[in-house]
Image (cartoon, rainbow, N blue to C red; front, side, top):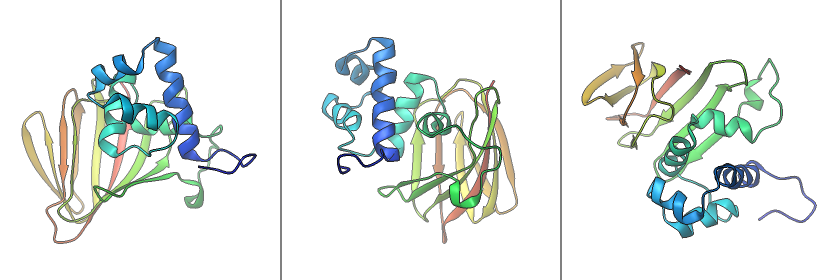
Length: 191
């Protein structure tokens, strides 16, 4: 919790934005829980900034709200500048899965593409139940290591220097087989 009078941090702004998105749709916490499969108490704690969402939970919320994760995180930031220095690129960590996400080129209203950098620890994996926006185009360029990406039931092993591109319409799964972490650039283009 932040001190009274202190500026709201990203977790506080994210919590407020999640509450606003639910309210805009007129959904109760029970309805949002039904749509996401996330417990009502967890959703309540997220909206009160008592809990930081995991990658999986944030992915489920993005899916029901029809947003990419980067777009949602952008909505809690101030108006983005044209030049985003490395020091100002928002970084989000999911300590439980070992996933780190850097918004290299955050989304911007009126633009359809964004670039993120992802790192996933050796042995770690992430699963997304649905595409955040059906038909979203993704290009994944591996900068270091290897990642296995499952899209539409097909497992693609993507090595350093390789690029995988696809349109995402359903679930996806990322796994870093090791022996070291994987670092990749992901370009997302909205339909």
